[in-house]
Length: 500
Image: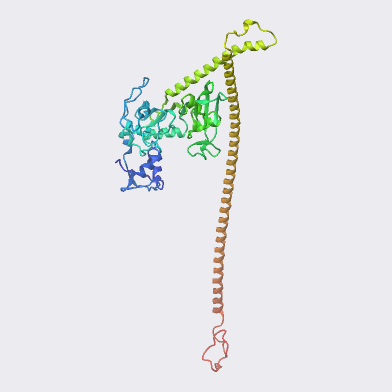
């Protein structure tokens, strides 16, 4: 146990978790909330809730979390200015056949950070249907109890962000509580820059742009997300890198971090990620190209190192299926160019022969050439042209969808204005109610004053009656000297009395 943590005078009356978070700024408030709930902070041997209001002078016993927050130095996987040092097998619990293919590659590691290249198909957190063989299992085996016991949440450890199951690429894990807090704050403040590579269907009209559309939970399919005016504000910047016949290679930089944000945004503008059947991709990619997952790869991540504060960049190379798909798309594009060029060469003499001037026999195709094959090539080229026209129609439809998105944003703004007016009206109502209550209190005060005045008037009247009685004659009027008293009277008659 560390020395007792004593509450200062100016902290009296405040929540215990807030006081601890200020005293140890390298740890988050949520960390202390979990520590308090697990009995890590006690007062006279009794645990206290995070909401406990402290009193000046109280002394709390706190578990020695700071020594556990700085694990033993481990050899870095990357030497400054050098190449990565290879790591041995981490002892990942292989509970399923073929699980060895899903072991992540370590890109960087030091005493604060672990950066990996997550393979597609590896689930980050345990979920229904994926209780074992997750990245969390691998982390427990690789980091060991010296690091894992630092974290109060065994279902999270030092994971500060996540990637979808079928998304590959850079993933950062904190190895200490201060590192976790520092990186989480960078994600919260949106100072972490993430860059993704993806193959999308079709060709976006603009070379660069920003998709700005709110993303929320789908009302029809709860496991998916959708563009919705009731969702959270979301932005994704894109830049087209290469156009390859039916697909485009695009790099994306999400400015926010909503669930499935990139996939939802690209689907919303009519260009879903190749292989992403959940968000509208065609089935042809699996049938003709063997693509079994969305071709989305977290390529690059930039942040400030939690210990040194220096800017660091981590990059994950393309996985094999990504590179294979790229090669197939390029080959298909080259084939189209060759066929288009060949068709132009063969069709030029035909068009010249149909023209007003007669063409020499040298310009005509040799009679021995197979005309059936030529006709087939012409039909194929026409089909390609038709496909291009269809893509243009899709682009126009995408633009119309963008207009719909603009209208949805207008509706959202109008809803926000109405909400603001409602809040303003409610505030005015509260003010009016407060004024009525003040008036009633003043009226009650006046009534109390009036009652007091009435009491005073009654007392004055009573005093006046008594004074009048005291001043009135209480004995018989003086008789003449020597005159006898009236008969039947033994003494003076009371004032105001009558004879019978």
